[in-house]
Image (cartoon, rainbow, N blue to C red; front, side, top):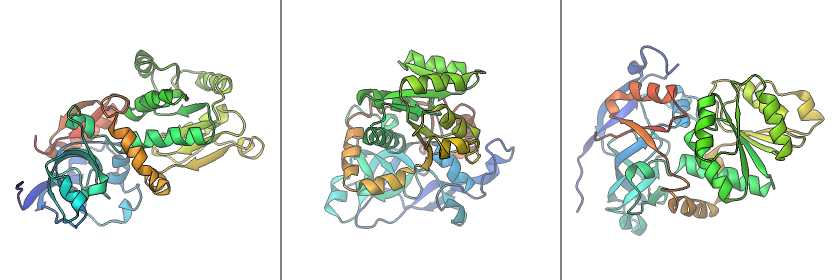
Length: 343
C-alpha cells in the first residue's frame, strides 16, 4: 500500500510577475509547506517527477491567462507533468491507476509541487519505454498540435503557417503535420533556429531577421496554398503573416510571446480579401471535441517517444524558480526547462 506525507513543498506565486527580466523576480515566489490535497472520488494523487515550463505558464504568472488574474494570491503554479499515482479516490477507474506512472494536467494549476491531486481521466498511463521526462509534456503541446492538424484537415488547408516555429510545439507540429499530409511553413526569429529546423527535416522555414522575410513568406504561402496560420507571437507579427497569405486565409492567435495585442492587420485584407483573425484556446477546443478527446489522447499516448517527444534540456528544483524561468525565457527555442520537485 502506498504511503505519503500529510504535508508537501509547493512553489507558490506570492506576487504577480511583471517581467521575467525583473531583478527581483525571486520575490514573486516562495516554496511553502502546505497540506497534501484531499482527494475526491474521481481523483488520484500523483507524486510529481517532472513538470515543464510552457508559454501558458508565463501568462498565468502574470495573471494574463484565463481567470488567473482574478484569483487571490498566493496561487499554486504549474500546469502539466508526470509522476506516479500513489493514492486514489473511491471510483474504480481512479483506483486502477494506483502505482502507475502517468502524464497528467492540473486544473487550474498545482503541478509545481511534490504532490498534486488531478482527475483520473486527466491521466495518460506511460508505457515502459516512456521516461518521466518524455511524459512530462503529454498534454498541452501534443494536444495543441493534434488540434491544429485537425483544424487544417477540416478546412482542407494544404499548408499551415506557424510562428514560434522553433519551439518544442513547432517541432512536434512539423512531424505530426507531415504524418497527415499537411505542409508547414515555420516562421522563426534567427538564422540558427532556421538551421536547426532544417537539420531535423523542415522544408519551409522563414527567418524574420531577414530584411525580405515577408516577401519570402508571401512567395511560399502562394505556392503552397497556405490559407491557415497559427500565431503564438502576436503584435505586428500576426498582421504581417496574414498580409503575406492568400485571399480567404485565416490566422488563429493562440499566444502572445511578444506581450502585445494583434496589430498591423490591414483593413484591405479583412474587407476585400476575406481574411480572418480568430482565437484558439486548447481548453475550449477540447470541450467542443467532447468524446473525441479520447481519440486525441490515445494518439498522443502512443507517440510520446516519437512524434510527440519533448526534450528536457535542463531541470531545476522548486527553490530555483527565478533562475528556471529566466533560463526558459532567454532560450525558448532550445527545448524545455522543467522542475523536478524532489531534486
